[in-house]
Image 1 (cartoon, rainbow, N blue to C red):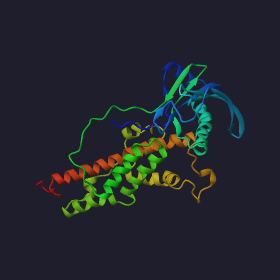
Image 2 (image 1 turned 60 degrees about the vertical axis):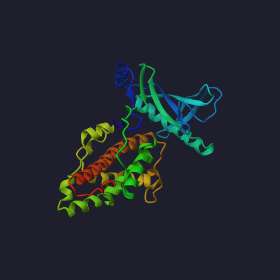
Image 3 (image 1 turned 135 degrees about the vertical axis):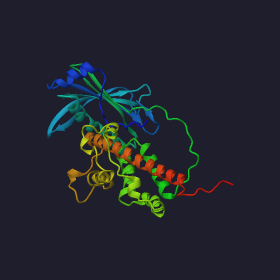
Image 4 (image 1 turned 90 degrees about the vertical axis):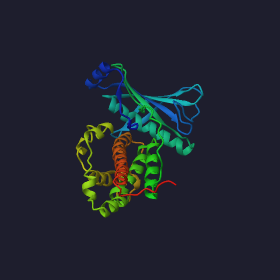
Length: 319
């Protein structure tokens, strides 16, 4: 079963307490915990940052240009390495608490990546409302193991090989930005260039078939958006044709990834990869593109299989 990638979606850990917290609009204390990962070694709740003992400091953040100090606890593991960062913030709800805490912590990790060559990243996070004892978690979901099954044979042309390998690159990356880049490039190969469709279209036309009628018009449906965690934020995408979805992706998102510092945009429009809102938005959008691209690839493979069964494509017999 396909499981959407991590996107900072907070799931209830104790329903009644969480409901009480969501109803409360007063300012109160929240604890936001970031669980780290040593990306190079794939060790969760770990890092490549040495820390002999717990360290508590105050860091200054700016909310609407107003400075605010928040206490931060850096927790050491048994290996004497940084494993968890916990921030205590004043907020009116869990979302505001996460927004206040995330960006300075993410930028600290980015700073270490440059100065130390660190490969530490955020593996998961949790938010706790101390007043209501409410807890939420955001961590990667785990799918059931897939059935082990080898294909009868793998033989594609270079275009398909490039698509398959690029899709695998996207599926195995944790970064929503890199995943988006991989999947959007595949979507571009289908709709902007049309290279992937050309081979099958020529075979269909040669056999007197109309490719448009055979293919039909693919659209995003509610099930796909639900799987991608895109409901309700992107519910307006329900029913949109794949071709129009590509145009929407191209016009609203692709230029931000393909041109990180676009000359025709203002500095405020440059993409800050540490911004929690950017991370969440791209994670959700990327889940949708993932589903669309996979559907297109599988549909194309099914079309070739159908043409083989109809005799439009002759498979040489084994000697």
